[in-house]
Amino acid sequence: MITVRAVRAVRAARIRGALLPLLVLVPVALTPGCAPAPAPVRARGSEGPRAAGLPGTVHAAHRGGALEVPENSMAGLTAAYRRRSADVLDVDVRTLRDGTLVAMHDRTLDRTTDHKGPVSALTLRQWRRVRLRPDGGLPGTWPPEHPPTAADVLDRFGGRIVLNVELKDSGGLKRLAGMIRKRGLTRSVYVQTNELSPAERAHRMGLLTSVWRSVKQARTDRPEKWRDVVDMLSVDHRARATDIRRAVASGIPRVWAHTVRTPAERDRVLRLGCDGVMTDAPGLLARTPQRDRTGGAGDR
Image (cartoon, rainbow, N blue to C red; front, side, top):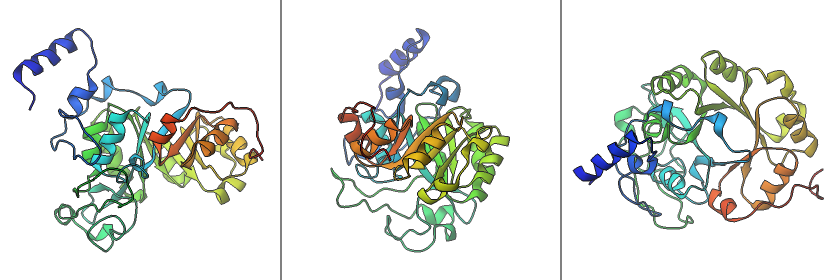
């Protein structure tokens, strides 16, 4: 527990203008496999980081860093945040039967939880009975936990780190937009989709927009036509060099590559001009220096 003396110290530090994001996030240290504190503190978006302040080269933890932590879990996202291995936390969001937005990548519960069946068939009450089933190949020990709702994620991390929220079903866009606006996070949360139409709607709602594209889509895309409505474009790192360079030259403010797993994959897309990567291994990339950006045999 945080003592009265500690609370007074935090208040005094705020008066002096100090920023203490780790103290207000979770009052205990987190090691791999340790569940985070259950009571998040509501974010104050106007005081936190914004997308405009991201570094020149961005590392985004895809689903929290799915090779290093349980994907889309509160414990995994918290571990990625505390390790400071990523500039952005990425999370997938789907809609339950009652309209609740929850953190989940797949259409079904089968792969990552102790339940089966479509996510969209559950109510929030039923969702609370679901437990995540961490992959046995992950480093560390990760006990089962409730999968979070989108509100849980925004309340815990919003205003403390830039977020990329991938909306897996666009029907939840209006609700997600309201949640982001209510928390004052319109300048620090990207709303990501695979198609341009939802991004255009999100742009009209005053949100930061993010669009990801596959290797096949990147071959025929003309992203320069999207530069007025897309704030970040994420292209499959396996795309042809010419397609990645076209994306970089499009005028879209940020161009990242996904889903990067190795330093070599990262270094290739950075040489081609990308200014960020979505990675399942943010810790590995943080420990591995980037090579120089001169061209190589893989830049074709």
